[in-house]
Amino acid sequence: MAVSRSLDVNGRVVSIEIDDPEMPLLYALRDNLALHGPRFGCGLGQCGACTVHVDGVAMRSCVLPLSAVAAGQKVVTLEGLGTADKPHPVQQAFIAEQAAQCGYCINGMIMESAAFLAKAKKPSEADIKAALANNLCRCGTHAAILRAVKRAAEA
Image 1 (cartoon, one colour):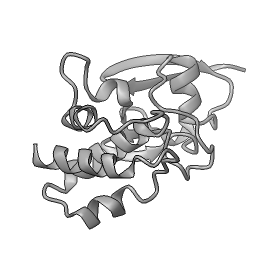
Image 2 (image 1 turned 45 degrees about the horizontal axis):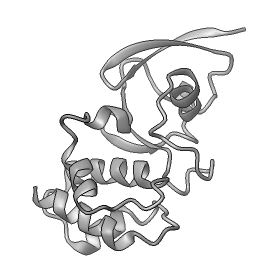
Image 3 (image 1 turned 90 degrees about the vertical axis):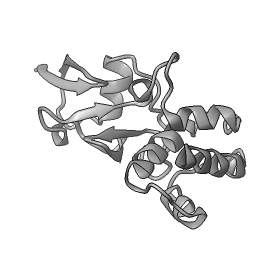
Image 4 (image 1 turned 60 degrees about the horizontal axis):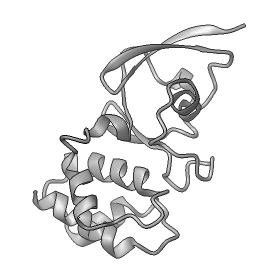
């Protein structure tokens, strides 16, 4: 039996119909709300492609059941981080450094970086590498990603 569930996503309260409250948040975002910033990568919470913010904390939406997102918690996806007219400083830095190659991991890299930089104002290169250690990129653009996060930290 389908139940209605309210979520605060990107500053809007939305209602979705779900059959299983244990459904991963990623599926609700992509399938029910057509938000395709968070990507399905490994499905195990290990690659980071599905990263979103829940109350400002970077979380893997592919392993986060909807039942774990309490009413009133704020979910932010890549689409809600900034706008085309006013991108988030991390998004601006990734564009400036051309840090995307295939772009599949970039959602997770940007979301993880934004959550990290919200807490670490003057991070070292080692701090940035440690923060992104669990976000995987198979294209080899790590150097550009690192430059982008450094640029965003200095903005």
